[in-house]
Amino acid sequence: MARVLEVRDLAVGYGDEVVLDEIAFDVDRGQVFAILGGSGSGKSTLLRTLIGLQPPLSGRVHFTGIGPPALALTPPRFGVLFQSSALFGSWTLLQNVLLPLQKWTTLPADAAFAVAMGRLRLVGLDRYAHHLPSEVSGGMRKRAGIARALALDPPILFFDEPSAGLDPVTAAELDELIRALSRDLVVTIVLVTHELPSILQVADQCIMVDRAAGGIIARGAPRELADRNVDARVQAFFRRQPLPRTS
Amino acid sequence: MTATTFTLQRATTADGRLRVELGGRLTLTEGAQLWRQLQLALRERPAEIDLAGVTRLDGGSAALLASLVARQRSGGDGVEIVGASKEAGRLLRLYDCARGGDCAREAPTTPGLLREVGAITHDLFSSARAILAFVGDLAAGLAAALRRPRSVHLTEFGRLLERTGADGVPIVLLINFLVGGILALQGAIQLHRFGGDQFLASLVGLSIVRELGPLMTAILVTGRSGAAFASELGTMTVNEEIDALRMLGQDPQRFLVFPRVLALTIAVPLLTVLGNLIGVFGGLTIAWWYLRQPTTVYLQELTRALDLADVGTGLLKSVSYAVAIGLIACQRGLATRGGAEGVGRSTTSAVVVALFMLVVIDAMWTWVFSALGW
Image 1 (cartoon, chains in turn blue, yellow):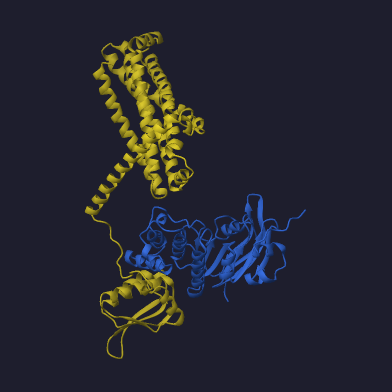
Image 2 (cartoon, chains in turn green, red):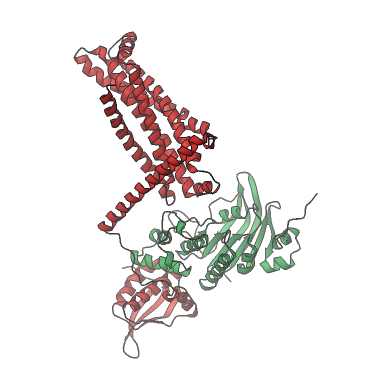
């Protein structure tokens, strides 16, 4: 299967502070790849570095076959769903989805409208197109964020904690949507999460990062890690148990 | 015309009807051309759109196809998509209009003049109702605060007083000095022509103390503290902090509005006193520099022209300005709706309404004082 993302010897952090080091992994086309870790493990810092919001301290992030690093003059190479959805609050859901289409395509207004409505229909929100983000639920905001991230048909989507703060049913629906995007649109999805049901439901492959260890502590299919990995930190994570205290 | 990576050809079906054959790569990059060419082809009422020659179909193009086909069908013309590969078929089903919603709908057009006028009128009534509700809440809050003064949240009062008062001293001094100087220079040129140099101090003194000092200070406070209060409370409203405050059993009036209005009520008169002094000093500087008038002459004329009533009327105005700025800024902030744009709108509105009200209050006081002979 074609490789779309290669990460080699990556160190991420702030200033002189290295949060995670020697990060290396590959993501294949159409795969759902999860970056796991507890709160404060550095997984969001890693995500910010992958999407270019934060420069790496060292190492490289290479997107295969999808052009050079994004500049303000080129359309974004990937879609991002932020943890807070980051929808523009004074714009309707439709206007939020229309924004990248108006900026980066030459579509006439009615065609852009048709594409934006199509994206909203895909995530089940076309009936709420003219609502403001404050007028819909948290789960709907997440789905609208996905519609916006999908607007330009990016080959890779990055999701930061997509199901955080959602009720189990809404979270399961979102997981189903992520699987459908991967299966039917053949979009590669890299997601950062610590929601156990989501990890087991949607991820094909994953890495687990730990700040105290300073890097990756486990990698593989989620079910494999949950059942066979002997690392105490991995087992504590998957079994939702406190870490054994070290004296 | 630029070459496209897709082709669109017309052919005939077995029963002699029109078939539109698409081929090549259908991607959003060429979505505009695809949209226009397909729209033209669909006007000829084809029976089929054949995708057998399509080598790639992305989500955006699938959405465009689905929308155009839905519109065609809603117009009573049956058109079928045929020959789609397994992947393309799956994608088209994802964007299929039958999954819900009405995708035959046209893009919304810009609202007409009548609708705009209606919306503005509706907004005006909504604003008036919100202001009335705010005044009502304020009155209830004030009554409760008077019964239990300790219920007013004064923890932040010192910081607010510093922000509204002490932090504003440099700009108030600078602007009032310049206003006093400009007024004196304009006056000196005219008075000197008629040999009335000695009246410069009374001109500057009365204008600054009764009118310009309080007004200029209030305008500066509106720009600094009024805008800051409106945007601060607006952001809190948008972030649901005000709702959280209510849920914690705190009254936003007593917790947020009263301390701010109180801080302004103390800070603005104090700033006005400083503004008056420096404005008069600006006049003195011009008198000394332009008219070569001795300082003692200027000060004697000033003390002769000014009395306590003049200072008192100016300070009375400044207190009413302070209350108006505080209430307007807080009301606008608490009435914020929407996101970041809403906060910007509230802040602008707070400053504009407050400036307008300052002039109205000034005119009102001037009329009252002249009627009372003060």
